[in-house]
Image 1 (cartoon, rainbow, N blue to C red):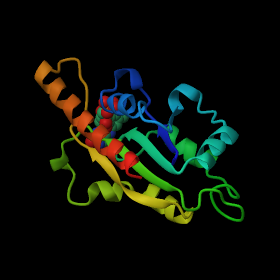
Image 2: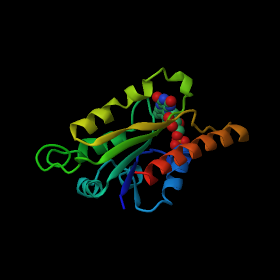
Image 3: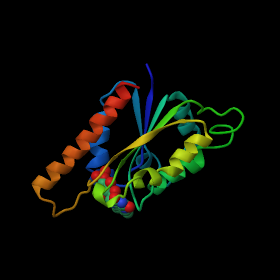
Image 4: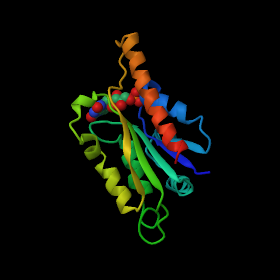
Length: 178
Ligand SMILES: Cc1cc2nc3c(=O)[nH]c(=O)nc-3n(C[C@H](O)[C@H](O)[C@H](O)COP(=O)(O)O)c2cc1C
């Protein structure tokens, strides 16, 4: 059975609706491991060897994160910078060849505020990194209008939860059929 590795990069999971719902749902699947980068490395001091071992064992790599200023949260960028080394991610002896990667992202803004193709453009650094490392790249799964605020009414909160659950189902289906 194929192995799925979820790299969770959420700076404030406690107050999350999107990533928290998605991760809770995925965690029930077999052959899946979740690495919560913020919990593991609150000081950004990534254990490179441990992350590389986890990646080498995985077939499908899922990057789960909220969009922050049209980008990935800094802990995920740090993870790429430290873990994707020469001889591991690229160059002679590279160990990521033919693995598959997908970004699973949540955005606070509504979909209408993302012009045609904008989300794909935001994802270009991950896509280009995947190409460089000969990793198969799947188009991201993105959900919009996911945010939490103290003055949110129950109906809005329920709608947001539903969007997150639909996102989780899509991802579950992808993993199950991978
Ligand atoms: C620092 C910061 C920057 C953000 N930048 C964006 C952004 O560029 N585009 C957007 O749609 N939402 C943005 N948001 C909203 C988050 O994407 C949203 O709160 C998150 O996806 C909700 O997921 P969660 O419930 O897992 O926290 C930002 C939020 C924060 C805290």
